[in-house]
Image 1: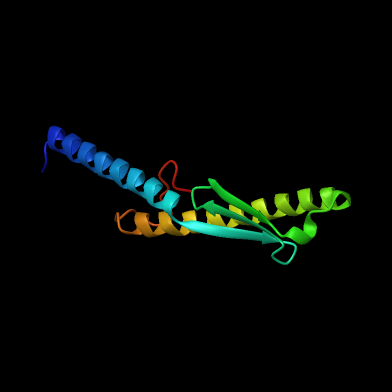
Image 2 (image 1 turned 180 degrees about the vertical axis):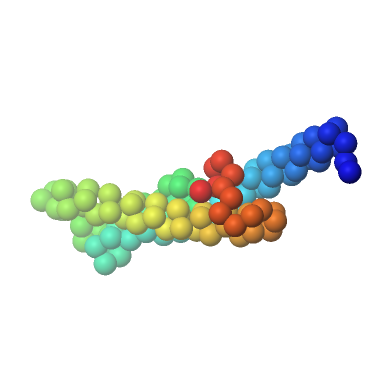
Length: 113
């Protein structure tokens, strides 16, 4: 049977491994891009899977002063679509990472869902 000291060292090593994997995952999520759209593609928002907005594209046909409120609503909708897509990609990536850790089903580490 392992001594308490050996068990503590093993737990510390496991925690360090998980912390490194979480850091690596955050870098990976920031490199994955998703695109949200609204208005049939008239407004597009590109974001990282981590949720960082990379760009906003607005079709020229919407550039009319009387359409200002519509454009604002479409930008909001496109942002929310991009955020939803980013959340789904992030969740998939985190599940993939945690499945390789040998954790029991349903076990959630802080920051992993």
